[in-house]
Image (cartoon, rainbow, N blue to C red; front, side, top):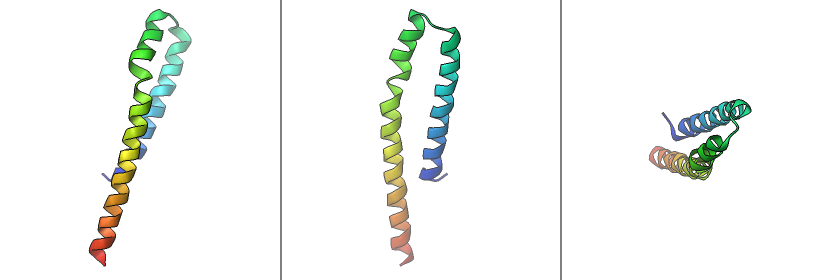
Length: 71
């Protein structure tokens, strides 16, 4: 799997998670839900962005290496 494919899969999984969470929050709206969101979901966003950035850099480095090897 390429880094670009992995990045797209991560973005899709995050989108699915947030959609599922939004549906769950329609029914689950109490202090426990707020704690779950604060403790588990909110900390994911910056980690996912950072991971996607790293995956993008990896894809760029891989592409550069391929170009260098084919010259």
